[in-house]
Figure (spheres, rainbow, N blue to C red):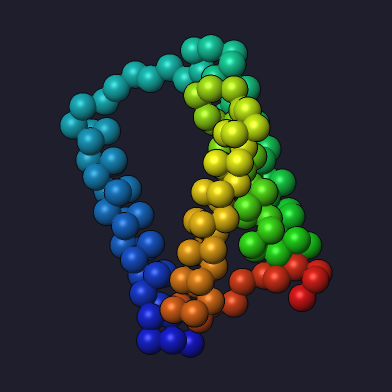
Length: 122
């Protein structure tokens, strides 16, 4: 394990704790009434996103972190982009996906020394 190995976990736990406490305090100070899913299209996009997340998590052991993450990023980009996905938009999404996933892969593998699933291709 690298000397940075526990840093990511501690950062995530600390950030989630702080954000949770701030949200809890805000809820007691000034409660708000929220309405979810005012529109059918909004609900369908959220449910589609949850379905894509489930598919992504199921795909990681077989395709590996890199391939599954690129596919997930492109699918979410196409789904959540405000305009309809075009050929150019999908190419931009693919380029962004490759850059972001390569950076995350490098961070976890080489800085944090955290092994990521490589899939059935080794």
